[in-house]
Image (cartoon, rainbow, N blue to C red; front, side, top):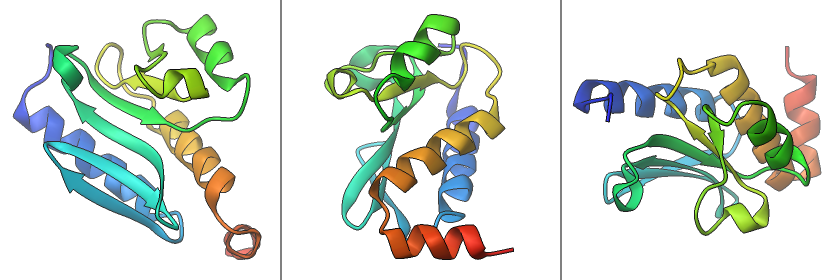
Length: 128
């Protein structure tokens, strides 16, 4: 593990900040992890050393094909997460390589769009 408590809390705070930009997204903290929900449905997880995997990671919901594309092009940064990987979710190792927060914001927004209502998406897109 190349990260400690300070890096863990910095990453959690950054992810909460990014998620809060998306209307109706709520963080749910528990057992050292943070989930991100929209309309009661989970769109992402921030996981700390999940089952001893040594990773500080974001797992995020993704459309078909996205997981294969990202893992195929950058297997150091992206991975197929346990349990949810079979459903197409993407794992992002936040400290295997320097985090690309713009890319992560895009992944969170993509997951949000898969779950948010059409009205919420229209309002978000219309906002300045």
